[in-house]
Length: 147
Image (cartoon, rainbow, N blue to C red):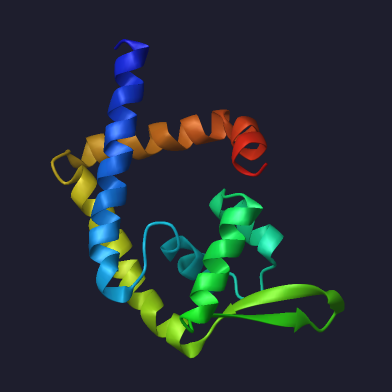
């Protein structure tokens, strides 16, 4: 497959997934830009913003803006780390915990939707190939996405 076609397919599929996520998340007043924060904070309560950046591979300014938005919506709260008063920890509020179950269902639904026409074997292969590419490009991912 020609490299330009591969990039084009990946770009189109990425936009398709993002559009589907946005449509599904819209009733929750969330978007593909911020739903992952809720998911990660549910699984990593008390994480710092720097750690959160690394968990979702987004740079600091984007995460700051989305955290502020989620705080204003009542989904996220920031607390002073009792062990280190200069650090801040991020937590979901009760409202954030409640919306997380809906976010997880939407995420699972979109994940299923994008590969629904593939056989089980092809789905496993696809996932394994994505994991391999991710692993092989991890240094570049860290350098580019977290800068």
